[in-house]
Image (tube, rainbow, N blue to C red):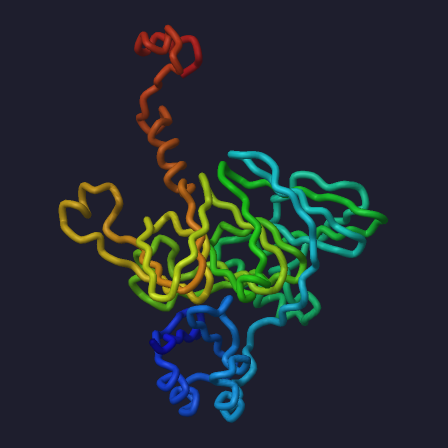
Length: 338
């Protein structure tokens, strides 16, 4: 059986193609050597110009124009340790001169020798001009984040540590962008911190259905570089690897992050009764491989909704936490101020 090939273009995967069909597309200039390809048996996505079956053809293809994206430098290599269970924080160990960039307000503690500096925009391309920084800040504003980020740099001797905490119950996981193809697409509030040199940008959802009903909107965060990034989400995070053409249907609020090669769309749950009374909404997020996806068991919106429903201000019932007064209707409220 001949190999089935896939091509990644702007975050979407296309295929499967036979080797002959894909070679014809390269010869026609539809794809170039800079586009990544994948087939079963390969360790991951690689540029077509580095694959024996296509490198001769890709060498004759016209090179694409340079992208207008901000420059992404080599990220610092940092050591880390994650502490806690339900309320986690990550402790990053820095050598002299190393830096870590984090969302404003995410720092838990830092040891002597580490200096804190607020920057305009994201963590990448700070050596560029004012317009580069302005573009980076604009991207962060579109994702609902602050215009500013904070860089923590070790200016002393020896090693020093800084810690960053998750803002709500859940898990923190590290992702090595160098092993993930250099890019990770994630939900807008998933980014916690990263090695300096990682760029925090935006990814537009091109499919109208996924943008309207996918639970993440038309704009998601795009993390680019070759260093470590730390993302957080509610409940427990699970990593799933999807093979070529393999599909997975997910609740629209449970998607945390995905590799650009994964195709992201929405699917109607089917059946009016299931859509209205099933409790899962009208749409599923449909993910198709190849690539990795990260899912969360407790979206923050679901947690906040349950807390609000139980709050007295929203008409929730005071369960009394098992106390005698709590079981006597409104009498307990006379003593606790409610």
